[in-house]
Image 1 (cartoon, helix red, strand yellow):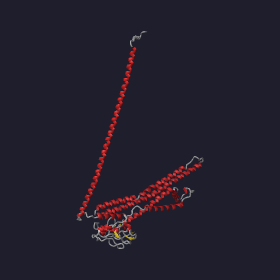
Image 2 (spheres, rainbow, N blue to C red):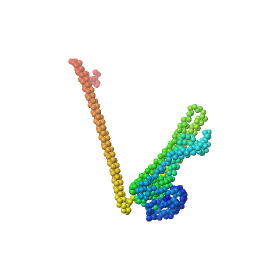
Image 3 (cartoon, rainbow, N blue to C red):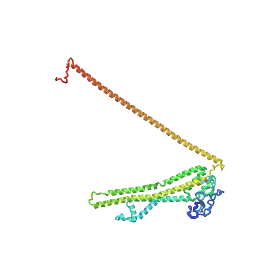
Image 4 (tube, rainbow, N blue to C red):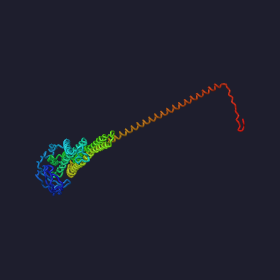
Length: 479
């Protein structure tokens, strides 16, 4: 089995990720030499040497030098024959295990075991009820935090131990992924480039890897990329698949923290709930109606303040557990993101540059050039039609929205016009009614006056009315 190591690891003793035995990394004297000019025959990998051999001159890159290590376990047989068609018919992949989500029952069992162990350790330090809190030892104080609010504190402790067991199992899975990064999944002995003639041998090399390491995100992604390249013979399709697979792995890693984030949210909330319950009991115990002695009041206040201190212990425990969980959770998230970034970098910097789909002009493969052009034109036309359809839908939606707005505006104008017209008609009707009423009242008053005048004239009849003129008195006259 071929492994990869950084140049600064030369001469150090490490463990093989495949067989877990100790080995010494040899000096990388030829790591900086250029790649060999001759390519090996496509008959498969050479037989393992049974130990560590000096490395063949390989091209030095960012992922370190290469060397061979003969594992103690027997090599896995190559599945399939040498021809590409037979490889495609007989290879079936392998069952992939979730690389980031640990088993829920296993994590709960480990967490419950840790919870029971912790409670068993604290139980002997439980202080008697007669002991004053001021005289508690350190372990008695810690035990009091757990046993004063048993339901809330025990629930928080179980959530914390369950979360820590999940992080421990995720750490084991991360170590497995890191070990798989040491594998030389694309050995130079099979060819400096990967083309349609030797891609089957690179896939066979993946099937020869140890079972405990080949089921990893990197090996699975490389296998899927090479098998797609074997069928499609198109580097662009492989690049798109690798990008999609990277997004899938990233979302899978992000989703694996849903339960942990729920625990991180629930632990301090439960602590606050315990505090509220303690405050309720403490305040409910305040009763000064039957107390006439100052000592009774003082003792009651002492009990209330003690209850308040006990209530705040639940919040203290919840905050401490939440803070203790937050740091390893974020550290694990960063480690998994770094591992995923390393896999993406390997695929973009090592795998894709070595893929040759026969579409280069220097190779003289006219059929490959035409296929590449046809696929490029077809993809461009497909993208154009998709964009055109999307634009047409947007234009249609805008037109429909404009028609709806115009219709709504016209309805509003008609409603306002009808409302105004009705208001004007009502105002005019009321004005005419008021004028007619005023005219009628005036006519009635005039008719009444005329009738009164006629009656007065009839009474006067032939009567004479004498009018005497009265002389005015002078200013200085006596009369």
